[in-house]
Length: 233
Ligand SMILES: *Cc1c(COP(=O)(O)O)cnc(C)c1O
Image 1 (cartoon, rainbow, N blue to C red):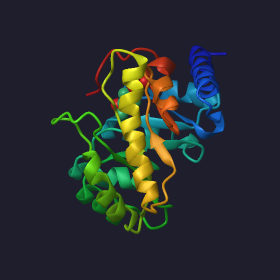
Image 2: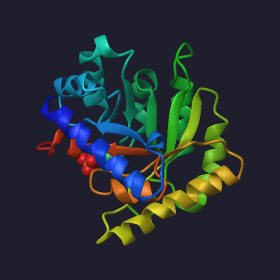
Image 3: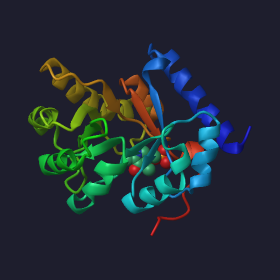
Image 4: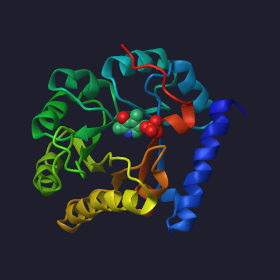
């Protein structure tokens, strides 16, 4: 197996172990491979090892990669996981399958209006700011429900759930506590009758805490592709 294939397998083992430890069904935790800063060949290698869902943060870098991997397009699922500015929504609506970082209705409205009608609805998650960091992206927890209602009503989007990026915490219990804040918002939206099924939570360093708190999708970069040496242009 290739190195990326080995690393993917190790991440799957970590997910399986965390699920066993916390009474979760591993079939309910999807693995999103975060390929930002890595080239199309790395994605090809992960694809050859069976990986299908890939996350990207930077729109132009992602568009170049999607184009370079056009031959695999039907098999790949592209997720936009970075903050999204309103002047970049059109290519995202046209090229991606999922968007995780929605924290304003205006962005969601643009994505819905710009989603080509021949494509399935764009699958979206609202980003929730569970730490209260003022300069962080994400809607405050108490504004998530009204935003969810508004986004769920847009015609060319399908609201799938929530995404959060908790700050690194000093230990497992503290990390789990931050993850549980996202879970509480997720449960409240479901309890309000909005049909969501995705809690996008957990990265290389905190996937176990995220799974213990109910994550249904972990977004893993470093543990699959290695350390990122550069920020793309
Ligand atoms: C980069 C990134 C990840 C992956 O982080 P790793 O620590 O490399 O696993 C996950 N989610 C988001 C939103 C990211 O920007």
